[in-house]
Amino acid sequence: MFDLNSFLHSYFIGKKQAAHWSSKQSVMTKYIFVTGGVTSSLGKGIIAASLAKLLQARGFTTTIQKFDPYINVDPGTLNPYEHGECYVTEDGAETDLDLGHYERFLNTHTSQANNVTTGRIYQHVINKEREGAYLGKTVQVIPHITDEIKRRMLLLGEHNQYDIVITELGGTVGDIESLPYIEAVRQLKWEMGNENCLVVHLTLIPYLKAAKELKTKPTQHSVKMMSEHGLLPDVLVCRTEEPLYKDLKRKIALFCNVTQDAVIEALDADTIYGVPLEMMRERLDVICLEKLQMPMGKEPDMVKWKEFLNKLRYPKSKVTIGLIGKYVELQDAYKSILEALIHAGAMNECKVEVRNIHSEYLTKDDAKEKLHNVDAILVAPGFGSRGIEGKIDAIRYARVNKMPFFGICLGMQMACVEFARNVLNMPKAHSTEMDPDTDQGVICMMEEQKTITQKGGTMRLGSYDCAITEGSIAAAVYGSTNITERHRHRYEFNNTYLEAFENAGFKPVGKNPDTDLVEIVELKDHPFYVGVQFHPEYKSTVESPHPLFVAFIKAAKDAQEQRNATAKRTFEKSNA
Image (tube, rainbow, N blue to C red; front, top):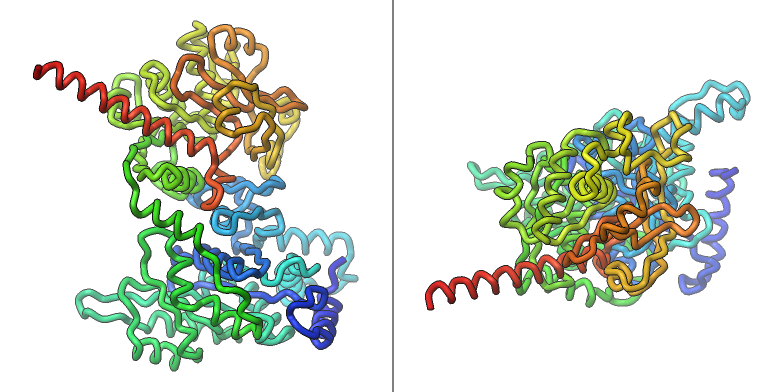
């Protein structure tokens, strides 16, 4: 069992005995906490990821974790409209979407340990109380909840595998749910010392157009509220629409009790991927290292990052992707897909314009009107029956018109349903998720899921093997016949119908070698028609764009060029 007092004792003993930073055996992990004030959605996750990227580029081993103040045990049962997408890690944890940012920026995997919620904290403490672990003591927020929060905060650095652990605290200072986390950080700073524990506070400097002024009062009040709970920031990162002039930085520093060089300007960026370079220009990494009394390491190597940004900002062409989904009103519901399209677009030196098409309002009658002017169609994941028929109609349009198609999870399942209905002459074909009574369930619940009653964390989650058929599009795209991908589903292709699909040219080219679960399907005699049961978007990063997305965007470019060439020939012929 983790003993906080023993850990802190060994920490300071180890610190005194450390001869210098280069001796890895003597190095102890340093901790940076990223908090937010004034309003939500300022971008704590992007700032945390950007700082981590810069520290990583300097040669430090770095990881990021997210502490969410809601009482849900994890985001797995949350509505995408309310919380955005649920991100899945390699080890099968259903986590906050910010972990996707961490992986995309750092190009490293996160895990269950990188996302902690208030629900998980309380669940652990209550379970211990039921076991009698507290020996009859009254269980309280302080010290029991805050001790568990501190234990989790220090867990990733327990064995010194990281030089720096960055912890993002969800919510904003002043939220009643956030108070135990603020108190836990206050205690850690007192116990570990300012040179080992740093607070970066993200806040807002609004620009009032009527007065033509930047206003610092919201930031001052945010810091004052934090100080009322015994915690002061070491670094202020100020989101702003206009540059912060020198006297304004001095005023912020004076009233917020930080050094002037620790007031960091965070101007609105044209892309989140530009933020690390902006933070490097503002010397955020340097200031944090100085305050943590750490060496500077090497100069940040951001060459690949700059190459990616250059391709992103100066594309040579443009394609339009029709994103067919049921949560399109909230962009965060498909965050990883949108970012994967950006990565793939940059790889193809192509701007990807995403046209959101709500599947609930798409029908067979208006499919042509809504889809004829897109270059490719992506049918997104989801759950439930709402909008299903619209997805099926979009897939039919892509199949009949030989338009590049990419179906992910539910998108792949509905491709199977569409093919069964319109090619295999199975009019009642469906998924038993949407129609439990159908006698043509081409998609059905996985056997191991049939006895499960609890919803949270019980789906097929995490990374699984997939064996790909040689000569398939997928094998060419991956450059391999053995891959691993992340899953999040309860339903699968019904292998009873496998032979009928294969005979009609609908090929299962990827299967799990242990369970024979169909993972990838392709359609014969189609330029690009790929459906996958897994979620490839979770593994796409800036430095390693996912090959399926890269191939999909290339197919969209090729289709556009072919269509333009045909239109040109038709025009020339008519005017000859």
